[in-house]
Image 1 (cartoon, rainbow, N blue to C red):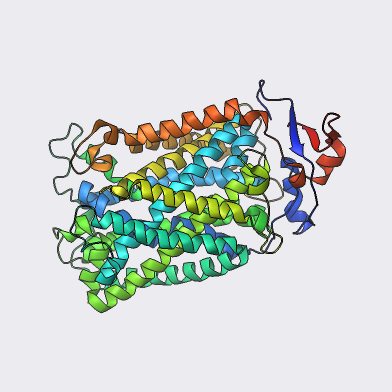
Image 2: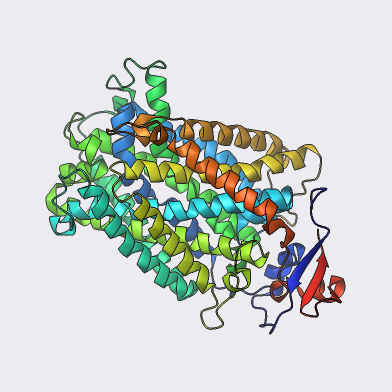
Length: 542
């Protein structure tokens, strides 16, 4: 539905050709509610959908990438941020599962915000999520640097790793190789992506269970290790609470991206049933397995005061506990997990870009929304997302704290995009405008309102926590500058204000489903030819 000042008509380009719809009739009926016709090929089954969600969350990628940060800031007791973040994210995931049952559509966050709120909120949510996905792809790809040089010093191509900028610069180089790979795979279609992703997730899950068992048989202390703070937060105004809130970034980084299962809804079989299950299973599995890895790692490492815990993180623990041969074998599995995680993040960004372009909400929309007749996937968004992610890396090439800066900014924007869904959803519930899916599909029932309220409060609280100007996150090493300390606020603010200013001044006058992507009923029942231009079709807004 549109806001009062939304344009009363949408102008869309007349299609040149109309490719045949793919997919089965029952799976595609929900698309007509958005005015779309089915174009993407439905080939993903139940496990594929689950794999997409869990590979984006990626247990091994997230825990191995920022354990050093959480442990270094909050000590062993930072572990409690793991169940805390899970509880908050579960509220969002439950809300998203209910939405996925009702609207399993590409670019899920964008389309949900548009449906629940209005086109302006939808565009802002999509814009924030798209930029966040590009930044997140860069952040995930940087995890290569935290693992490859531990396997072999030969992977440290820039310097020997001791120079001020050696690690950051080499990290950009390795990340660029990974982004090139994910770009090529996604450009060659969803089938290839699904095969690689499924195989990678299978390996990751097996490796995760094996790692848990190996840690368990090497424990040297009890689970009460998570009660130790190592005097973190001493001298700070908030004491340990301040350190704990900062360290929670390490947990917040892992448990998001479960909406990917819904964003692949137009390429999945029976998505209204499979997507909600995949969202919840991915998050719960990640919580249980990831929590055990973190706990058992601290119970099995030889010393809780080892310097490597705060510099190398879980990579150090694995080599310390399992030895050189076993440890490096496990690190190769971590590398596979990082690869499929980057692939999933890239895939989700492509589907979001396609969804926004299909509504003529991005520059060069017709080209961005074009589905390759050979690979049945949008190729141009794959390339553009890859190039822009490389640009993010290059901007930070000599930034020693590149890992925490890029990661935290990406998380903040994703939490903002999520809030632009759960917020309008809460308003719709309060106004009695929310109708859950029927037919035995997932619904929260009477728990919908309290869950939705908690999802909004959690999302808003975490945005403030993550964006709070801290040297530990945004300017950990000298020289200290105010604009680095406030980097997240400035960058995210510029993206939000600048992007929406562009939308309000330019893009909102063009928004509307492109005719070559519009449902047949829209084109025949509501479409009229503009007398001034025979190549344009005008359709009424929702």
